[in-house]
Image (tube, rainbow, N blue to C red; front, top):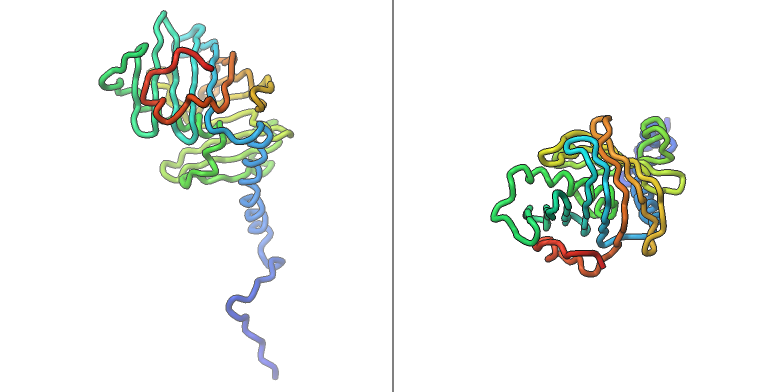
Amino acid sequence: MTRPRKERLGRKRDHRLLPPLLLLALAVAGCARPLLERAIAARGGALQSLSRASQAEVVRGFPGQWAWRFEYRVPDQLRWTIETYGEVQSVSYDGRTVRYFLGSASLPAPPAALGDFASIVRWTSVTTLDALALDPDVVLRELPAGERPAGAAAALEVSYRSDGARYVLSFDGSDRLVAAEGPVVVPTIVEGRLRAAFSGFTPTGGYVLPSVGDYTIEGEPFFRETVLRWVPNDPRLVPASFAAPPAPDFR
């Protein structure tokens, strides 16, 4: 009688024997990075920094018309400058420290509430896309059709190992980022799950960027942002910039 041969160590397995659900999981995991790469390419390519000047109609927290600037440098440096009540206030994070400026003057210690500014830094990092492929704390998963938000042609789940925070990015048929959602704390104003819908895509400095963002918090209207000017890859925006007050204007 012939004995059945034992499988040798290192012998290749026949993938036809793998359970169909496992094959599907492997296929989905393998698609996450290509979707991210396609989205960056659809936008016009990688970014080192991205700044914008905007007007916003805010309907929750402190309703009214706001004017602000966001200046972001990959992977986690951010300054938010707000023009309100005749004053310019800015919150800046240089990757280590949060600073608060009133005009060009720096407060010795920022208000305690600004410790929550980290969630805005992360939101900006996630929605700008470039840092996601570089952060070892990030887990990416392309969502199957049954898990995508309504209307999304493709979607990417972004999860952080360190704290379990979860974001969902939605893309259209051209791989453009058209919506995002995730946890955010806007110091002293609101806290919850923020959702943004992006529209009005226009060419700007070799990139295709949205001119309008409609934001909700916990499903309730929050603000509509109209971008007046985008500045991709501003050469003046170097790491040391985030330890200083903002420049008076964009280049």
